[in-house]
Length: 112
Length: 114
Image 1 (cartoon, rainbow over the protein chains, first blue to last red):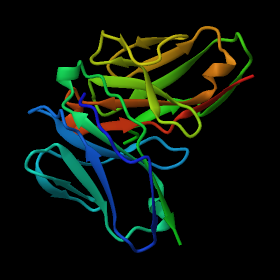
Image 2 (image 1 turned 30 degrees about the vertical axis):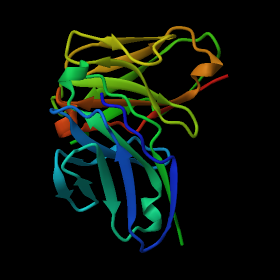
Image 3 (image 1 turned 90 degrees about the vertical axis):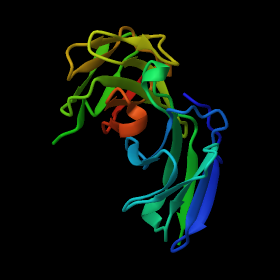
């Protein structure tokens, strides 16, 4: 499981775009980049995954540069309900014996 | 589809009591995990089972035991509960290649040890 570094917290306002960058300098060739969202008192929810370039779904976009040493989760036009902790994970699964560990995540607070 | 189901949702134990937290998934996933999350903190892996028939220690296994009963079910046992085990416990499941397909979590069990 590649080591990741992401900001501890970020504040934003409703309607703004939030970008969270995750650094993963030792990402391996087979590794995928996965982001999870956790609301208070709930289990984490898988929101997006990518390998390279850009991925977009109904919740977020994920930008991955060519060297794959970092990635940016973009949340467009956030609302109060986007207040959550966002976790960046990098790995493939089998190579790590399928051990799945989480870092501290980024606590995003959306203000009115 | 229920996804990952944990029981119970809430539990209060006295110090020294034992209990088993149950987890079942209906997605035919090979891998299952148990985490604990203390207030304001991140998730810490207790034990995991990469596939049916195997279990391995995670980051904080002391005081816990697990059983992978079958492909669907993975239980977590506290033999002698301690106040330090007061936490929210999450169970998760995934395919072997969690990096590609993601992991899915239950709603958690809130455990208080008094």
